[in-house]
Image (tube, rainbow, N blue to C red; front, top):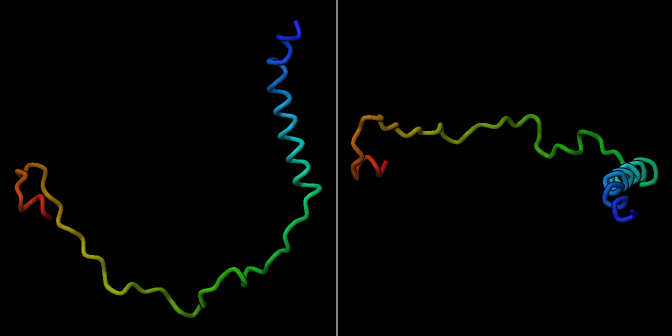
Length: 74
């Protein structure tokens, strides 16, 4: 009879363990010091990002084009 109780109680034991660890994390563990939002950004705000050159898109192959070495090399 006790053999049937252990597998049936296992999900509840695991749930209680996870809830206990969550409570312990929220209440007992120290919180890291809060950093100001400015310290997280290392890139200066006055320098805008600009790509070096516009991207060159490859020409798409039509669906009805026969696959040749020239087309496959694109």
